[in-house]
Image 1 (cartoon, helix red, strand yellow):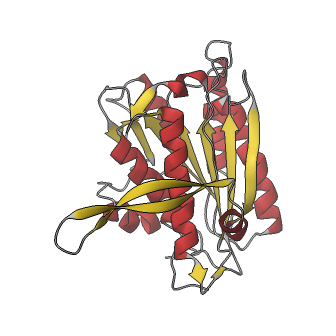
Image 2 (cartoon, rainbow, N blue to C red):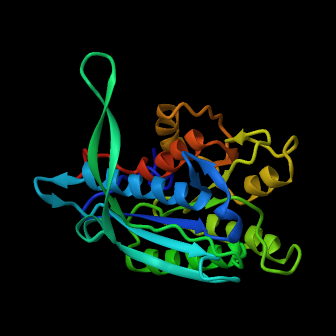
Amino acid sequence: MNSTDNSKQWSSAHPGYIIFLVDQSGSMSEKYAEGKTKAEFTASVINRTISELVNTNMDGDKIKDRVFISLIGYGGNGGNSVDDLRSDYLSSFGDNPIKIEKGKQKQPDGNGGFIEVNVEIPIFLEPKSPRNGRTPMGDAFSFAKQLIDGWITKKPENPAPIIINISDGMPYNGIPNEEKVKSIRVAKEIMEIITNDGNPLLFNVHLGNGSPKHEFTNNDSQLDEQAAFLFNVSSLVPNSFKTSAQQYDFVLDDNSRGFVSNADPITMTKFIQFGSMSGNDLKTN
């Protein structure tokens, strides 16, 4: 592997950067899974993912800052709002969650079955989906691009940043097609940024509504409108990420794009874990 194929692993000296773009539009209040709305389920998956990152980057009682995380919501304050909900190093997330909730988790009982145990769940992202919230995805991409430009200016030797965008619909700012066109344009600008580790990666997951699921497709010739849009705003999956994808049972080929359309809850969870864990090689410092 050369130095421009997204193969650099996170380290304390050269942390990675993950940007979660979270659709908080009104439609995210629809029921999705486990008795939760789309907004609630998305928040729970992101909270669990950050907790896993914290746990896997512990050194004794200290959290190693191998990654910087930005949580960006769009539509969550109504209209076309885009909000930096939190941007911080991993240790700050681990040491300062918004709150701790009590819950239950199934764990192996040692005899081939499972038991429910009481657990404490750190909360880093709370669900929002106001009725008047739109889907200003293009504006969210623009904000992410600004964050990436600032990051790579200060940290040119670090791994290429990763954006994971979670949405349940097409971009919309109140004017037909305007936000879609902007989303495609800015996504291409992001994917063309040059770093010493390759281009930033833009991965997209669209929450399902019963339509056929498309994942990691290599062309858009047979895709519906939603999937074709996602194809056009998603990065090619680099070879350095394909082993990780296989661990989550995703099937990829040489030209697969990093997106899933109409994701069911299991696929959505695995996709977010795939996108956020692939740079987390614990052999680094």
